Image (cartoon, one colour):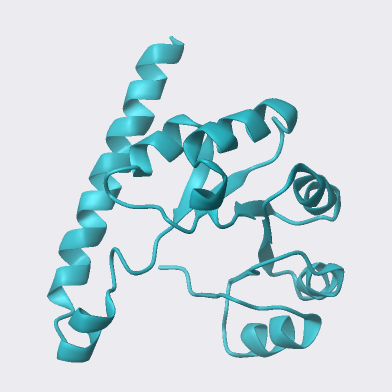
Length: 157
């Protein structure tokens, strides 16, 4: 299991998360300060971006991956595929609006990983303490992603 910290917006947040044991950092947008601090502390950082300009800035900054956020705002997987065409060396993480129904499309469009929140750990189940449901939902996502990757492997051969 890897432990990370999300919604980090600056270098101070990166340092706090690293001291708490975070092995990776996720930002909602680009912060050069956060990227520098993550590099200094040898912690992976996935920076948020949405537009081609933001993706380009994030790509050359030293970020380990670009978190395309929020995915659903720009037509989803088709937009990711278009960005991958322009930035083929950039690893993309699709986040924001990723569901069990569309996660395979994001993988087929070129996402190396997915950011999934409420579709696995919804507020109602968390409040009820029903954590078993998280395991079941996570397993469904893993199966859908594996099938999409297998399909892409067959298609590219």
